[in-house]
Amino acid sequence: MKRWSLFVGLGGLSLAGLGDTCNRVAVFFNSSVMPVKAIECIKDSTAATDSTHACMTAATHIKFLCDYLRIGNAVYSPGDILIGLGEILAVIFLPIATYYLLRDR
Image 1 (cartoon, one colour):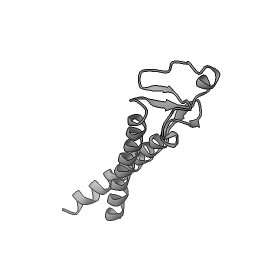
Image 2 (cartoon, one colour):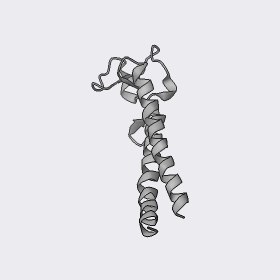
Image 3 (cartoon, one colour):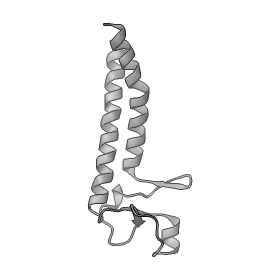
């Protein structure tokens, strides 16, 4: 159990790191902003979002890494999903692995 939980927890950290890298690549190739495909942008192409997000346009690069996945009222990128899943795995399984590693000392 301890070895399995350690691998899953560290895999979660790796997954979160991969998600962060995906987000950074999207921001790097889009002039330091994360493009968003949101309803507000579809209605008004000049809609202002905030200092780190901008509406997705035809000039947007690497669209598959940008924010376009609608969950509820929010819009997420694939990188955001990877970060969230990785954090969940790490928060659940790393304490379990730590418990077993400390118990067996």
